Image (cartoon, rainbow, N blue to C red; front, side, top):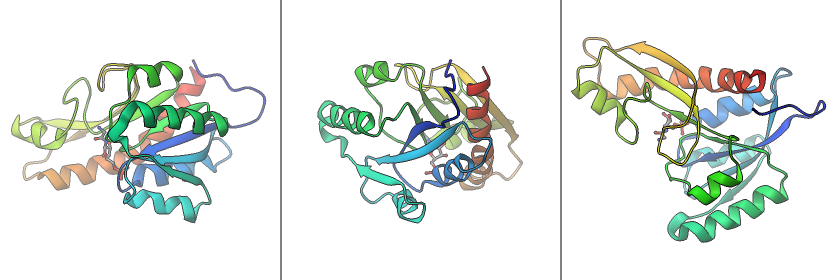
Length: 193
Ligand code: GAR
């Protein structure tokens, strides 16, 4: 697993596509004494991602790569990650699928958060699908990224009850609140494995 070397925090990049609320909580966590990681780079595939504003607020470098030519941009990202001595990647609402080649370069060092109780509801529209199926519970999962979508080893999950009048947006809100808590806890767990 990921081992801490010396007393330095592990330089980490967070990949986002949108709001970046998970990014915000990861940044806050990274600034605590107990955090094994520092966040040194924000990568987005979307120039309009709201989360990019956090880069300015917290003085963290940010880079935007549009993924239309995936392999070309992934190679550019790999160079940037190397340049910044990034050793770990947290995907936080990043809506692109990374290639096998990219993942192999950071094997066991990429984490993702997903808004369902994996292995249920991989992919998109998780909340709608959970409600359509009359699930009693949903939740969120932090897992390692492997080459199959949302299928890597699970690190931590939080289960929440779906209430009677639950809507897609009320469920998303409840789950997101839990995501903010479990992502930092999952990172602590990874470093204690
Ligand atoms: C979160 O709910 C995250 O789990 C989900 O996108 C949202 C991003 O919110 N990720 C995925 O669906 C990945 N397949 P945020 O930008 O506020 O962190």
